[in-house]
Every structure is written in C-alpha cells, then in structure tokens.
Length: 206
Image (cartoon, rainbow, N blue to C red):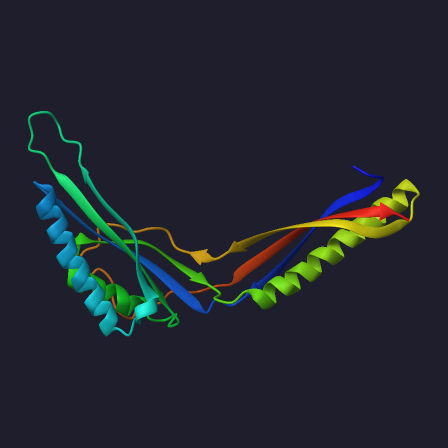
C-alpha cells in the first residue's frame, strides 16, 4: 500500500417498509410423477386465481421454483413422488396478509405451505445516499484520529470501495397449513428496515 491510511466507515439508515412479499408453496405426493404434477398444477392455478381475486396484479406474482422428485421410502413400500410449485407474491397492502393467506389456504387446503414473508422498501436510493454520507463521515473521523495519533496530517482521498447490506424484516417459514388455520384479521407488524453502507477509504498523507 502507498503511504497513507486505510479506514472503514459505516452508516446505517432505518426506514418504514412499503412492500410485503409472501412466498407460498403448493405440494403434493402421489404414486406417480404424472399424478403429482397434475395435482400441483391444478391447485397452483386455483391459488393464483384467488390471489388475483384479492387484487394481486400481473407483475406482483411470479414462480420462484418448481420441483419434482422421488421421496425416500422404506424398502418394500410403494414408490412416491413429490411435486412442488413455489410462488412469490408482492403487495403494497401491508395489512392484507391474512386475507391472502386465507384465500390461498381455501384454494389449496393442506397442500399449501407458507415459506415465509418479508417486509421491504421498494426504493432504497434515498436511504443509500444518506447511509453513504454517514459512512464517509465516519471513515473521515477515524482517519483524522489515526493521522493525529501517528503525527501525520491527512491528505486527499486516493481510493474508495463500497459495500451494502440490507436487513428486511421477515418471519420464519411455516409449513403444513390446515384450511382455516388463520383468521383474515391476523395482524402482522412490519417493524423497520435497515440499510447499511460500508466504505473502505484510502487517504494519502498531506
């Protein structure tokens, strides 16, 4: 490294979420692949239809995973195949989780799994700007302190490297839901979303 000092500064900014993402899975076990796939396909179509009926738009629902595999069974037992289809729903209605869940359970019954829900902020650009400013001030203060301790004067910045992290609020996954397991008035609390920026800043000596 050229003469100077390298420091890392960090800045965190908190904000209120404006997006809710819910991940549903539809699963079915059957004695052959065709039956498992057909059952999952039908139930997934039903789930998508009722979610559309809850106001979920075209760009707010997508498939995130599809799988089919043979389950392990004890020797001598009939073969079984598990098919699954995972869909993610995004909505601006942060209070509508219970209604979405009840609709999906009503359409798929015990074939439905809830893989998780997550609150997020759709546009983090303003938060990143603020976090970046805080990180740079933090890095500068550290560099000035180190320069003073070493008996040097701080010069200009010669390099900057940035990294970002986000901490969306999310719930643990829940599986094997029964029909009517949740009431549509179920309340969930979004909490706060944290964005963190770290800057590695290289200062030359004056």
